[in-house]
Length: 269
Length: 269
DNA sequence: CGGTTATTGTCCACATTATGGACAGTCGGA
DNA sequence: TCCGACTGTCCATAATGTGGACAATAACCG
Image (cartoon, rainbow over all chains, first blue to last red; front, side):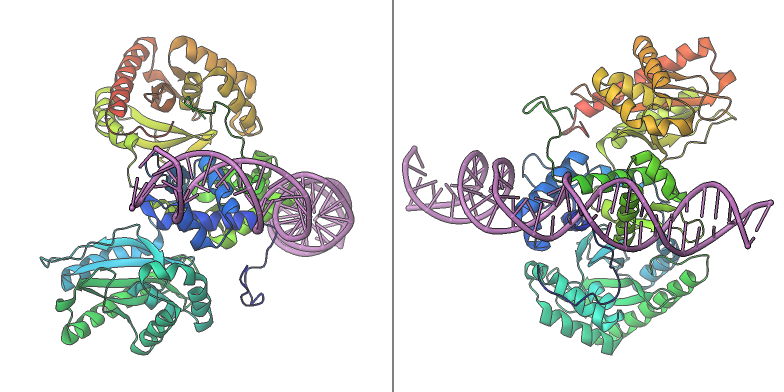
């Protein structure tokens, strides 16, 4: 394998290599969404050997956690995963806290508003509110998953993380950056910019002609929990309006943070 | 499972013991719902050794698929699972097909109607419609999961399976039957009854004083896909009404089966 | 169509990984 | 303070999972 930091601090428990690998395959497949991914991309993203990935995927298919699409031969998350998910309450504390505030903010701003969480080394869009302005950027759907660092939300979240961890993630995601036309250096410098500015911007959105602005939301413990993002056509987000939008986002983020602090428990930590 | 085309023999692929074990731990935890389960119950249900379960659970916690509740020390399905589930379209073909029919049937019958699928060796309640009669049995919620064989839905599904497979499942679930006050012999004879009668009945419901009746729903390939269940207080389901209810359920089940056959693809197999 | 490449699937010798018996904490009740 | 029930850890051992090399498809073309 590739060498990384020597047992920095956190996750020691060993004797479960296979399980960890299987989970990372699952996460990669989740990023493939409904259509799934060809085996080759799983190979590249996980940096595992072909027989290993093949065996893992095959077992996951047998167990029903993964499906193989007849036509394309691609592998995707299977029916069993949502079934397992039913064991949890339907709405997380974060979603509950953000619900009303997002509604108001998206009405106020008029553009599409996204709530994005971090999950492992990915960002995951968990909520979306469509604004009133006639042109809306809808390309990112709830459930969209991408490597941390390639979207403005990802950059924002990484900017709010301890620098060392952000670097670790950037390194881990390196093999996945190519397909999003970016690389580790670019990502790191975008993170530095975001840290300086206090929010994340993406001038060339993942969709051509769009621009995104993201603020981060922290848990009471100071760890970033999510990002709040506005996406709009580029021309609608000039310098003047950028300031307004940033203020609205920052305000909303603080309100959500306050709600997370109040009740019994915060989400992740 | 049922592959009638090629390779009738089923799940050979080995070299993934650890992954399979981890998944079975996950499924057991899913049955624990929001509150989760103490480690001990996981031990019993999986029949794995303590160190093994402990290690698996610990890794799953590190990876975010499992959470440990601060207070109780119980383990439960973690936030990451619903996050993975977002990679799939929100409604399965089965749910879509059943939606309207369930609505009408529950209005017609007046008691609570459940849609239950098989997932591995468990049943899982995926939909519930509350009827109009003033006394309703609501104890089973969407997401409720229990070993195949302990509920009328489970018995119905097993009755619709090839006998050999039903026996296999009954054997596999044996260690879990005790906590539901049943055992393998009882389950097998209930299955035989259901097969003879054409539907599953549970005189002493899992909740005291209730009675349940279930019909099965098959996929176009003839494999049982789900069960349709009515639960009501015992006194409301005398012999006369039982017949009426069974007719309504059977009718509804056929309609759902027809819808599954029509569109592009059937759900599980 | 044969020929060439890209992708997926399989085999098997080997050592790393995962296993479980035995033991050590931890917590709560009386 | 002792007891009992549960949870967590150690470590010698072998069985499990690994990956290099090879085989089988599928896809692409001239």
